[in-house]
Image (tube, rainbow, N blue to C red; front, side):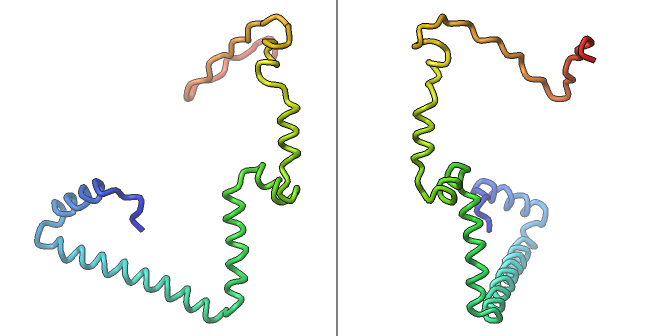
Length: 138
């Protein structure tokens, strides 16, 4: 539950709680918080167990599509196409990558063509900056 909070942040929270609550009420507040978290965790696990008991073997049938969905979320578009459309054979992509010329070939370094300077790109707009208006185009 607290996997995102580092030890340094925990110490800061403890010092802030000590300043806000004082040394007399801090142990009671920590005890109440831990008991509340334990109850919430017990309710959640109880609800899962109750759902599992009521649905029986159908509960596993519900979990499988969710596991498949999580697997799809972690895949790249290339992996999805390879797995679902090409049955795991990515030779099409490898052949396509071989057919694409290198960047140097596109710039004319290896083809014997003269090197032309690349056009300069304009700087991107700053935050809340409006683009210039071309009066001839409007």
